[in-house]
Length: 370
Image 1 (tube, helix red, strand yellow):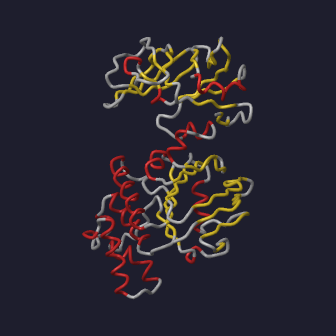
Image 2 (tube, one colour):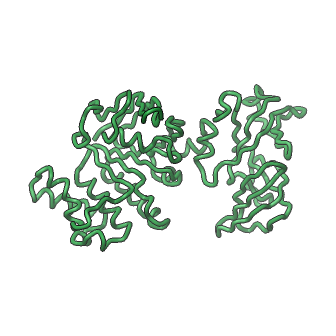
Image 3 (cartoon, one colour):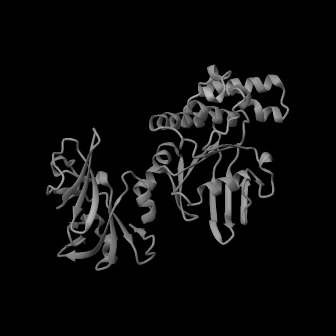
């Protein structure tokens, strides 16, 4: 078992910088998920760790060993790719055993390892089949099993669920989480799907344009995003953002977004007083926008006028796509809500859970305040 360290790792492809001075410590036995949009550098980071890409500068450390100049086969890692990459002419057993045979392990040990991994993944009955006889989910489990039998210090997963349908993705991510608990090994997992990241990770590293944006537990990323990018990326549907000004209204401090004005609770007022009369970005998640008929008790609710643009009935909830002045936003409301496209509809903002971002520090990615 081993911890993993990226120490100011930069990777350039010609003039393009895919990773920029990435520094990250991953403790032994952690399940870390690298998440971000396409092109953010997450797969490049994984490939640098695996030795499939040579770093331009910085150090990659596994355990106590700097592995910059260590061949991939000698890094004691196992990688599961998006494509299953199974040998079509080999049985499941032979696919899983292939790497062990190359290492010239005794036949009895190879058989024991393959059967043990197959039992862990529930594929013992598939060992005699060829890949063409398997479903997508079964092929992915074989690919994971091929990694398990190597008994590496670190498992690397590069978007392993992308080729599965929605139901299989849910099932397989639960299996991978249980596998991590059983193996007690370091897992580093790359995905663009923030739902996968939130449900599986011990910690999440959010990346954008080759830069680490924030590394934290899933809940803290959701509750306390560092900047506008993280706030918008974590959560589904994503956070609503409104250009606004903070201003005083008598003894109150309010968020003025032109089309609506909402009051900041007294206990949070002091935090935002330095931003009075300044332009800010006001953020609130769809799950904190309520139908006024079903507002939970004990919250600071502020009413906002809107017009319904689109409704999406999800069964256990309704997504309302709303317009207020020049602002478009989403509400995630109680399924008992009755409204229709084009109707005027007042909503209630939960002002216990709002966010303020300051665009004066970085207009492209405003930082969180408070």
